[in-house]
Image (tube, rainbow, N blue to C red):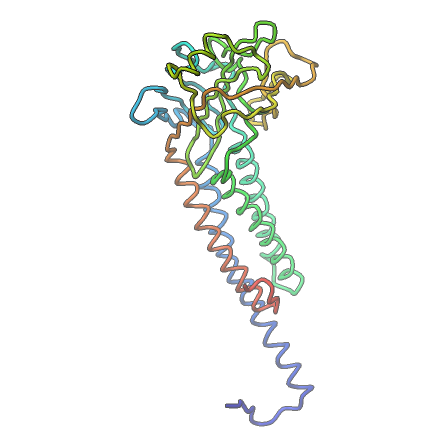
Length: 332
């Protein structure tokens, strides 16, 4: 089957007519995408509001299923855990209750980074709308394509942060919460006495708030004869988990945290009081006991759904623009 144009047009005139038609189609699409851009900006502003530090925040339950090893609640406001009380019945430490210090809240690094990405995305759309609001040109279409590519990367990173790592996150060795975040402070490793410590590590995975509690012991700590005998005759058992019998380098000191009222990115290593201007000190430790607790966060689940929907809308707009511009690499 063939298509004939009647009356016949000379090849030179046909090329001019095709170019003019493609330009009109591109101009029309750029104008039509203005509404899509406004919808994307409004949707991102709704996502931004879900992370806004507004009282009273989200109170989340922390509880291990079918037992009471961990039982308590924490409150998240924006990207910070501002208060909480958690009862612990760990096997390797005395039973205790820890309380988050309201004067020194815990900053969740994934949410802090997400907050920055959302701010960047909204600013990007504001700039794009102001530039493309004038009569469309070939330059404005190319600018729009580049801006949408940057926005797509930002949304992909945001969704990845909410999904979290697919495997065990090794950053707990340098980003566990500082003892100063708790009342009383968490027990920490003391090399002369070779005592155990508690690592408190919060992260995000699949829109859930995940708490990892680890009992740490220096790798060079001596094993008492009674412990060896109990393990040998079977009266005591080692606690089995995926990090058992592995040596980790755990940072015990770093620069102290300082945060202004605007939420900033927290430092990468846990903090001990009085460690100003000290270099991070790493010691080798074993993880004697590991407990994972997950808590569903409705705001984060809603945020993931909204960002995913916005990502689909953006992908469709990019494919349409790429098809009209003849950029076949973006059509896949």
